[in-house]
Image (cartoon, rainbow, N blue to C red; front, top):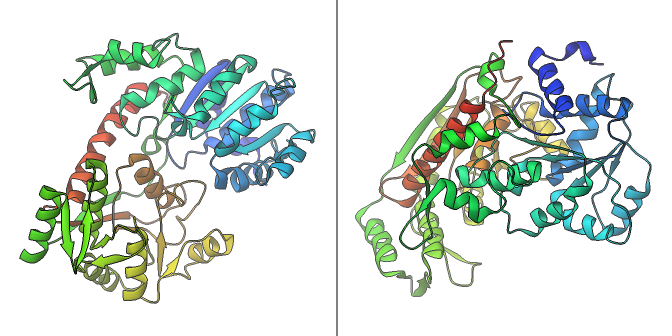
Length: 449
């Protein structure tokens, strides 16, 4: 069993940071052990009687599997009692009635939890928000629910490796839950007008000159940033693009859809009533299949990405490969073209089989496979068959392979259709990543391990 002595020096420093800051954020890179860091700090806080009941709000898979398992691995945290408050309402209520040190709930049920304690005292004096970037939108019910009970909580710890997946606009809601707007403004509007300029329509906000540095400076006392590459001896991550080229017929169909918001394909009329819907349809087209208006059936417009995926698999014979898909049509077409592939499900046995090297090609969706799963032992190649706009999904899924324990160089391969929207999506993700990296680098701890 692991002991306190097995903690890395940077992990001990992070624990001390949490213990010495009543409210703080750990912007910690994937694979650096944010769960055991927090559990170690929690164990110390409980033993010193600084806190008595800890609420951990996490993604469902993480709540169900990661925290309690991690606590049991370490001698100094195995004594923490943990109550899992997920599942049906009756089961959640029963779990809350159990005397424990740590209570785990998935973020989708935080609104229910706050309502549950409407007519009784809020019992939790310490709040841990695992993946705080999922509380980056202050208009959501989950954020408003936490805001409501925040005054009753004496300590708050936020954890994420992706604090600003869509840029600096994502920071205000997370920092507000730590300091009630002391640093970045009491309202989102005040934050926007202080640090950003709007376009003439008032829809798009860009940081004012020097705003990024000012924001970094204002929050640096609350935040400890640790980058994976600074503390782990990791193999390289190699990113590449495999570009496919549509024929003239596909180019014209795509152009018609893009310019006219309408395409007649095989006698079925497909329309895009808004720019957002159009963007979705253009991404579908880029991947090779376009959904009809019923949202259930789809028409194949090209198989360029399918053929490229086949080539990648053939060229890497003997290597196990993760394939990220975006739409159900992608999934159906890949399974039809390559019947031997398997699909990630909710079973731990599937994860175990992958890590044991028993699954040559595993299809995963980034929205359901981005957190709480270790896949680094089963392979080192991830192919993005289709992209979406989320930097958070993108980095989290890449981090399933590129994390502590990976022994091979990790290859991230993007299949992109020439002159179509997924080229722009990849460019946007890279741009968002630069903004986030600038933030993390500005806040990066200068402590040398």
